[in-house]
Structure formats: C-alpha cells, structure tokens
View (cartoon, rainbow, N blue to C red):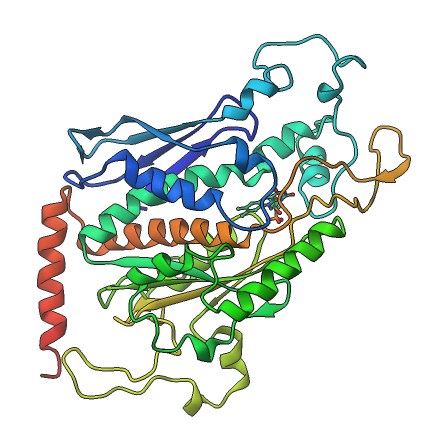
Length: 397
Ligand SMILES: Cc1cc2nc3c(=O)[nH]c(=O)nc-3n(C[C@H](O)[C@H](O)[C@H](O)COP(=O)(O)O)c2cc1C
C-alpha cells in the first residue's frame, strides 16, 4: 500500500484524529480545502441534532509546511464540540459508578437491531455497549473525509476530479434520462449536487425524496438510498489484472463497503449488466487518439484496470439503524424483552454518505496513482504521468 491512513476517536470523545502516510512532497494544501469537504459531510436533509452542534474544522499538526506537504506523515485533528456535554460519560479518567443522579452514564444494555452493539459487546466482553457504539458511530467518517481531502488534492494536481450525487432515497429514484448530457464533467457535479438538500440533480425526484424522509421522521422511522461517485481525468492503467488484491474494482468496492451502513457497490452498469446480452453491455472501440468509446457501461474499469473512461461507482446504503420508534430488543443484563436503546440520530444520511464515498474513492485512487507513477515528490509523479499519457495517446495512431 502506497497511501494509507488510520483514524482514532470516539463519537462523543474529546477529538477525532487521523494519520495519513505516503503523501508525496510538494502537494499544495490549505486547511480550508479540508474544511470545505467536512462541511459538505455535515449537511443534508434528514440529519439529527448532532450536526447542528458541530461545525467541523480540521487542524493540521504535522506533515505540511508553508502550504505544501513535505513527504512526512500528516496528522489531522477535529475537535468534538459536543464533548463539553459528555465529559463525565466519556471521561478518560475513572469515574464513580453509575447512579440514578447521573442518568447519561447509565450503561447501555439493550442493543439496537442493525447496529454492532450486540455483536461488539459479546466480542469485546463489554457490558456497557456505549464502549462499542462510540467507535462504531459514523462520526468516524469525519476523518475519512478529512484524509480523503488530502488524497483528493494530489489527484487534482494530476488532473483527476470527482463528484457524487444521490440517485435514490427510500425507494424514490431519479429519472436518469433527465440527467444525460447535462453534467459533462465530474468537476461540475458537486456544484449542482451540493445546491440540493438531498444532493439530487432531478428536481421532481428531490421533492419526492424530501417527502419520503419527512414520512420516515414522522413515523419514528428511517430511510436509506443509493449514491453515485463519478471520477474524470483518470489515466489508462491504474490497478492491475494480475492479482486479486491489485484489481482496482475490488479495492474500490472494499473501501466503499467499509463505510458505515453500505450494503452494496456497483461499477458501471453493475447488476443491470447481468440481465442483458453481451452486445448490449460491452463498450465498442472507435478510432481515435486515445481510442474512443461511445458508451461507458463498464464504468471506467475493465479487468480491474482503469480504461481512461470516467469511473462510475454506485453505492447502496441501508436505512439508519437507530429508530425513534424503537424495534423490539432484549436487555442483555436482565434478559427481559424491551424496546431497543434510542439516542439522538439521523433519519436519513444518504446525501452525507456520498461525500464519504468520494473520500474513500479518492484514497484508493491516490494509492493506485502512487503505485503506478511512484515518486517522492508531486513533480516526479506529474512527469511520469505526462509521459504515460503521451504514450497512451500514440497507441493506434
Ligand atoms: C454519514 C453517515 C451517518 C450515519 N448516521 C447514523 C445515525 O445518526 N444513527 C445511526 O444509528 N446510524 C447512523 N449511520 C449508520 C451506522 O453508523 C451503521 O449502520 C452502523 O455503524 C452499523 O454498521 P453497518 O450498517 O455497516 O453494519 C450513519 C452512517 C453514515 C455513513
């Protein structure tokens, strides 16, 4: 792995941190470029109260000097403002045992269906499932987005741009035919998507999605959906066909599936390809320099290698697991049937999930870029990339 990152931090703990290792020297970075994406992750119709409390700001404390990366590990921190009201519950120091006058510290003993409360509690032999849910929370995706913003800076300096948009919420889908030809580049995509509360490009579908989210909220319920990440400017040849773990489609699917609540990933036509004849799926070649493809059903990948067409990944998110109208559960200490634990929660987070999806795609692509074009500095990478693009343009001329 050429670019890797680790995150640490609990949802209501003092702070979230990440260390990004492998960034070449010379990549221009200012903290506002990270904060822009952190703010995008916090928006979206259907969020709970937490996102109104936090205004995430990144702090860079290593690896960047005078506005450029210097090749050493980069450390990012985002403070949790909400920690102020959780100091006692999330105290690092030992505290007195729970008593009725400290209700917030009451151990969580009733697992929420769909969350890792139960499985994690058993796995780590922890009776207060707060120890599990604090880290399992998608608050962790803050640091994925912050780390991804750095990977994205590297990609942008190499002419690679990405965006995402929501294509489905709670069973309401965009009419894809209304989008064809309207958004020629991934670079323009976010400007349009971010102006919609549900990050949807189809106005009719947007209204119906908002209505569906309201319906879920009013019923104490939640909804999921599907978002799409699109990347432009990729050179031919990232990833490799030679080993299972070097195939870029597998690496992207793994990274996207690792996001909280994601239950499926499609590339290009995805599952639809399985329903069609080969002649209706595979993208013909046409004379050109580089060779032209009139269609992009493959979604930019063939044999686990980028083919120069835009990368298109679609990701399915299940409905949020914390329901205000809690599902049946069992108290693991008393063995009594009762309603599942409830705490402040989103009822739809698909718009934000698209921003997290972009971050994970950026990290995988930056890693693949470094693998192919190596180099300790941005300048060396740009030089090899230029040579490679020139070579690809010469083929079949
Ligand atoms: C951006 C985002 C926000 C989320 N917000 C919540 C939330 O407020 N409440 C909740 O119960 N789950 C939320 N989730 C989903 C859970 O974190 C996730 O379902 C849970 O950790 C279990 O993991 P799994 O669904 O991958 O199996 C969110 C996910 C994402 C991507």
